[in-house]
Length: 324
Ligand code: AHM
Ligand code: MG
Image (cartoon, rainbow, N blue to C red; front, side, top):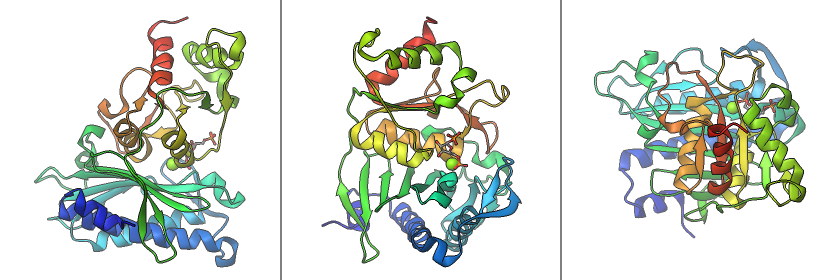
């Protein structure tokens, strides 16, 4: 049995990064406890606020954001943070080394129905001299992440973590420790499972319509095999499934708001999930380029996402390269 801290030590992870990850996990444990109590703690339901994306905030969105913010700002290693639920970056220690970006509670439409949600985080190093109160300080592409991961709050709470040396799962035990439960995750290269919100089909690009159309034809179509479909509406749970047994997940660009590149956010969802997926030998793409190569222009920027089993994502990309 190996504790998260022991495992990171074994991997010779930078000590300050280990310290920061420990702080993130204290916050996630607190969020897990609040979720576990649910209605008993009076934490379900919505607030009267909307966030910078124009979405109504759930009570738990705000609670999770406050827990992460408080604990991270108490850690002198943190120069600043950017959150899906904060309009602007929040500066921390002016001499701090790390910038943390996060989605405090992803999949929050699932909170009130007691279905899986998660916390997604990404760790960057501040460029010396840059002001952590400024948006521009955070605009690093995904290749510059030094760590990324999520905690899935499902039947058990599971951390998926990468520091650039593979992906490992740690399960939260009743003792409050995260314990290594799966090592060096590798995504199967092929799959028969896809996840996409089919109700948006009419808004997709022709290439995506044609790719999914062929999946639906199953063994009668060009793919020659039957596919199964999943949609949990919680990216953390979808990515966890992909890491665990393969699959393809997409939330692509669609024509509902043509100026926006997608629904999911590059810095809080796209980049950290892409780091995990690439570290597990999968592909994470906008359908035209690797997500981690996208140079962010603003902290709340959206991105089109297609990720998962290598061979399946390559086929999807071929539809985008050669319009059928
Ligand atoms: P959120 O961060 O506001 O929860 O939104 C992101 C979530 C993802 O977890 C999920 O993949 C997607 O939104 C579901 O969207 P939809 O409700 O359109 O199916
Ligand atoms: Mg989210």
